[in-house]
Length: 557
Image (cartoon, rainbow, N blue to C red; front, side, top):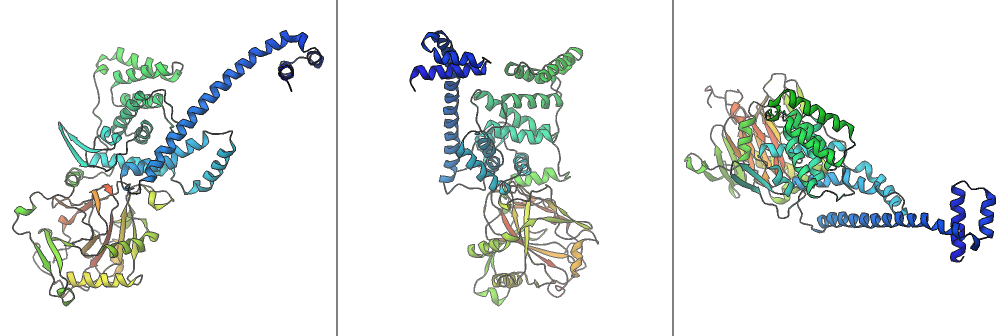
């Protein structure tokens, strides 16, 4: 078909679409050259079509460049085999990508056979991806770390873990590779807090989102859900809730610069202007938003201060009663291989046994427990209460939960029997059931922690008494992994903390010789700042220890 014929066909098509009768079409086809004026008129709409097509191609090229950018960004993470998944910022961005970014990328491409194959593949694995609850939990974990370790939000957004107190800046952890957060990342964290009515946390994260969106305004990213307008919208209302009407008005006006037809925001502007006119003090008044005490802990300040030390003991060596030694406990089992003992504290008596297990033993315990991990519980009165956050029935490795645990019987593997013999030799206690519980293995999630609690029962109706072997007289806790930052064990009332030392074991008495609980053993697992924390607990009960740890009448023993 020649050019003239193609133009005639296009003219005929345009005539059909504008409702011309069939006779007119026949006339056009039969008198092509004499109807050049009609053909010429057809060139104008085609030029408009070409302009639309050119814009479409440019947008497609920009989209492909954006997809290439996204591909390179994700590929760079996978190419570095040494990247620590335990970094909470990396973990958060991984969960966000799988829960949100990939979905936005996939569903942004519609008219393409390749994308259909990608969609089909995505739908097949979708049930194995993090749910929105996982993204919420990861965001809350970042807020928890922000609170406990006084982390600066701007620093976190840049990928650095800095505590800023006044003019003092302290680097708590220096990652080998920085994982910065995008504007959309910060918005999602802020929105989780915003949706909970937690404007204390929402404001700094939304502020950072607004700042980053401003710096890249006009550079739309396919994977993003939010925009500068979204961030301004949420931040304005958050400031209004904080009592800063003047700044809420300023942000709302900025919003209208980008979206002038938004009637809801226009009404908000009128509302804020009216409030300021009626009460001028709103222009400067700002309610101090109190940080929400989510766990409602009376000991929160002490707990967080101890966690902030990261387990360091600056005055530890000033006490001559604290010492290190090689321990055999007069047991033949340990004569040829004594254990390095460090007395950490006297009241309560807390001892750290270094290198209690080997790397291979620690790894094997983790491997045995991993298939059986479930959400941890703490004893509370008559019930065992699941700790803090709801969890999703998804892959355990991505759970932004407090911690998971599993119980291992000594019949699972001969190595566990050897471990029991070693604990018994070192403590001098009977660690066989029913005089001790099976080994509990715990894995902490993103920002994972255990809130202050006693290991021993504080109520006569506690489920701990179902074993018919009395209360928990002692705790033997083994650190099965190293933690790069955070994750210390804090003893709240005794006012000290112990860092997580890989392969070491921490031992303390929960009960006094009189059988009464030792309140000074109130302890907590500080949030894991960076790292993958695993511990194993062996809880030893009263019965069976009568001649191994005789009772005493003094309340101080």
